[in-house]
Image (cartoon, rainbow, N blue to C red; front, side, top):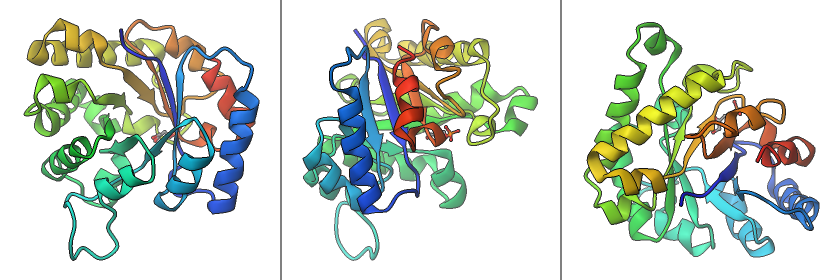
Amino acid sequence: MRKNIVAGNWKMNKNLQEGVAFAKDLEAALAGKTLKCDVIIGTPFIHLASVASSTKLGVAAQNCADKASGAYTGEVSAAMVASTGAKYVILGHSERRTYYGETDAILKEKVLLALANGLSPIFCIGETKDEREKNVHFDVVKKQTVDALFELSAEDFSKIVMAYEPVWAIGTGLTATSAQAQEMHAYIRQTIADKYGKEVADNTSILYGGSANGGNAKELFACPDIDGGLIGGASLDVEKFIPVIEGF
Ligand code: 13P
């Protein structure tokens, strides 16, 4: 059966010392608790090796290159990410799509390289406010999923963690209602079932992201198709992140 996962996405926050201290503090705070989910922290590249070697928590990069290696100044390859001990990579975040021009075609390459290097992509999809108002949100999410992922084999697809992040809910304090999130998660699962079959769909973890926090996590995670969260702001402080983890 699919896993419950709570993953933090620090985005461009915390220097190396702060990041390492956070990981230690989080691990200490979770020790002795019975967790009902896997916990992952998504750090900037420079933290990966230090955090992965000093904690048993899952560690995710927030991006990787769309090329395997070579003359690509400033880029970090999936192989490099994997060599740090990180097991996950967040791909397709709306901030990467919007600010860095990442298209479905680019993301398809990144996903292939991540998988080839043994990383599980946490693949983000989600519509803008305008797209929801125009009632095309289901189409948008389907296209993002199909164009970047649906040439994968069923075996490779089963390594993907999906994350539904409505762009209008990210960092805005506007959370999708649990009914809106559940409706979209069920749609995403059905889309996966149509392509890969019910078993693969039932085994795919689909996380919700967008102003999720300790106050709303429990209600969101209680929905049948919501298997956890991808958490931005509330993942930056141990005291705020723990109540999200305890939403399960
Ligand atoms: P917030 O939780 O800050 O809204 O960010 C969500 C997000 O983008 C996680 O990837």
